[in-house]
Structure formats: structure tokens, C-alpha cells
Image (cartoon, rainbow, N blue to C red; front, top):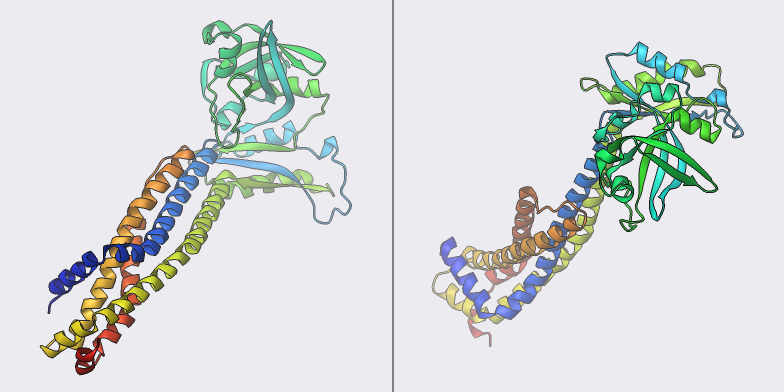
Length: 416
């Protein structure tokens, strides 16, 4: 008996017991479906996180103050401990071909722009001329914060298109040059709009507020924010944007080493640096590990499904004992009998696996849609699932098949 005949007999056996076969497949369907769904959602999640992090600049390097391990009792940060403008200029002068820009910022706080009955919630941040470029913020009209604004501590602002929709009825050209009043608790500050940027929601600024109450960033000169905060010179952290042909991971260490020369005599603080590229790689690795771990947990149901397949195949061997005896009596070899039952087990698992792929693919698609990055299962995950289904069929079908093959034909014919 060849393989084609074995497949035909196995298919007839499955058709003769449709409900039993379906229930047998259920464990395989759930297991494969769960693994496919988890891998699909995991890939979508990784893609979403990576995309969101890349939107902040894949070549960016964050340099921050860090307490020394031997500093003892936590010391209060003094103005002299911070990163100064002189340090930033020295870094830019030392590595002019590796640095595309340096972002400086000073948060001023939450406020509300008001004009009669109109209002718009804002988070006011003081920035320098490189900030918008380093953070991939797209200008729609007008200009960025410029060096002359920071040197003169001007009362100018760059606002979002969402802000313009609320305060100027969406008239972006009409918003330029207009004055806006922003209330901070018990004081009001006045700024002149010089530019409008496009607001983009990411996983890092996600908000569940309504369109009316949505808070967007408003950018003012960093020196203006520092004066308003009565804050001294210097920054606790800066963001360096490396040029396209610069290895940001390697340059992060170089930049930190250069700036730490200014902290040789500082007993409490030093500088550390981390590149967004290395952070993205770490997140990718963590998300992949998490997806694999969850897939392994979901795959436990495949073990349960495989045991179900073995159980039903043992029942099938018992039910067809006389048939096995008859086939052996007319010349079927042990290998013929073994092949028939192994093929039947493989077909049961393969059909269950294919249904599981469809079920898991749909579940993964809807799950990834909720994350805003709809995707389907990858070809490799489908092939892995199908191959695994067949492997389960062989592994859990072999014992019942071998038991059937070893039956004594005379005893089998006598079986009632």
C-alpha cells in the first residue's frame, strides 16, 4: 500500500467520525491559533514601539547627569553641577562633522491659552533652535525658534495645528503674528505666534482626553522659560543628534568621555550617555523575548492537543482491530499498518493546524489593529505552525500506529 492509499483511507476515517475528529483537532486549533495570534500581535507591538522611538530620532544621543557611585550621601544638585552652554559649544566645536544639532530644553509647565470663551490646554516647553529638528517635529508654516529668540529671551511661541484649530478656527496663516495669553495658575504670560507645527500622537504622548481638552506642546525660547522659572544656567540633560554617517552608539561614549573632562573635579556628579539606537535594539530584544515566552506558554495547549490525538488514535486502533487483522491476513505488512495510522494522525493535526493558522491570523489582525498597526502572520510563522502540527501528528501518532502494527493477525480477527 502506497502513501496515496494511506491518505485516502485516513481521510475516509476522518469523514466517518466528523464530530470526534473535530473535537480531537480542537486542542491543536487553540494551540496553533494562540501562538500565531501572539506572534502577530508581538510583531505589531515591536513595530509600533520601534516606529515611535524612531520618530524621536534614531541617531539621537541623550547625555545626562549621573551621581557618582562613591559620592556617599545624596548631594543636592548645584548650578555648577549642570551641563553648561560652554560645554555644549565645546562639544560642537570638537566634533563638528559628527554632530548635526544639540537639543536643549526647559519645561515651564502646564497652562491654558484663553481668548474669551475659547481655550486650549498647553504644555509650555522652553527650547533652543535645534530642538524641533532633533525631535523630528514638522513645521507647517512660519519659523522655528531661532538663536536671536534665545539670545533676547523673546516672548515668542511655536504652537500646534490642534492649538490653531481651537484658538484661530484652523486659520494657520492668520495665526502667525497673533498674540496669545497663557494662564499659569495665578499669572498670565503673553506670547506672539511665530510658527505652527503638525501635532502627532505617539505612544509616548498618548492622551485619552477629548479633542476640546487635548493638551499640546507649545515651544518658547529656552532662555525665556529659564527666566520665568527663575532657574540658573545649565541643564540636567541634553540631546545630541548625530549625523547620518556617524555611528551613534559609538559616538555616545565618545561624547560622554569628552564632556566628563569638565567633571574631573566634581565629586558628586558625572555624565553618562545612551543612544536611541541602542535603546531601540534593547526594546526589540525585550519584545521578541516576551513574544517567544508567551508563545511557549500558549504552546502548552499543543501538548494537551497532542495527548488528545494520541488518545483518539488509541481508541481508533481498538475499534478497528478486526479491520487490522483482516488487512494483515491478506498481506499487509507491519509498515503498511503503521503508515496508515501515522498518516491519519498527521492529517488530523495538519487540518487542525491550518484552521488554527486562520483563526490565529484573524485574531492577531484584530489585536494588532487595536494597536494602530494592523498586520497578519508572517510566512515564517505560518510555516513553523504547519510544520509543528505535522510533527505533533508524527510524535503522538506513532505509539498508537506502532501498537496497531504489532497486533497478532489471528488475535485481531477473533476480537469482538
